[in-house]
Image (cartoon, rainbow, N blue to C red; front, side):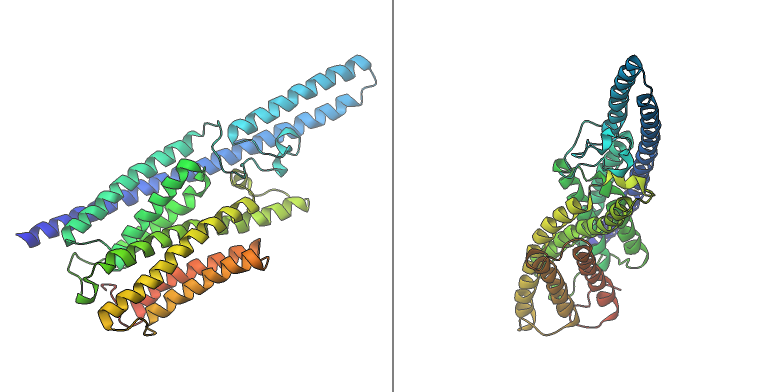
Length: 370
């Protein structure tokens, strides 16, 4: 009877995971639609600004005093007309680019990433769908826990599904204070990839844990690891966008055409780097506790704190990479693209640790369930 209940809960969990993936997919499309629609509108504003700027310059050459005054008045109205749509499209920038004919050379995203008065319907719909998907996803995680009779992160399938939920939940929590909707496409896209990978490549039926995992340290150690990995996911997306934005800024500064109009909805590279650095610092503290509590758990389970197991080594490698990132940026001036690449390398190590190491390397931590 109990086995049947557990199996039923497992089936409900898989159904919820499928519904969550579908909802996230629609949210992903809405976030992408927001970027595309806003980019198209801003491009139209740029063309209008260039046209009005050309008309103003032509009127300024008329040698009639009245005409010059009239042209000046038209220029003032043109200025207000141009800056208005830009402000409505996104938060006003601290620069004056939104008030000139070269509006395309500036940024419409505010470096502080605070919410403005704009009404971007696709973005609001995307956030609402993400909240709905997270609620369904939470139901899937909870029913998996009820079916297994334990915390739902005992194998690769459970770690990926729970990790995807935590990543989305952290994203939504940060949205309360910061306008990070520009990250929606990337964070939700990663969550969809994690859910699909869990269902196709790492699916594991509901079952009991191996004896070594039947400890309260599983809750402490793995929960902190999941939270830290979720934060690293956010900083990975920010670092990738930082590289793209940095390249765009250099292209515009060199007089090149702005071919990535949607990036105007993204803060400048420096703002992305600063926020990424702060979040990485928090995640690094969590990963430090992950390493420490893992060593304590190893001593309880196997009678030693450290044994150079493959999983232990790669957990330490991740710690070293992010420690190097924080140290290099704080004391050695590793800013800009070098810091972004180091942050990306750290996240790739996280992915390698929780996929390749778990699946292909035999050791005391081979609990993938495959």
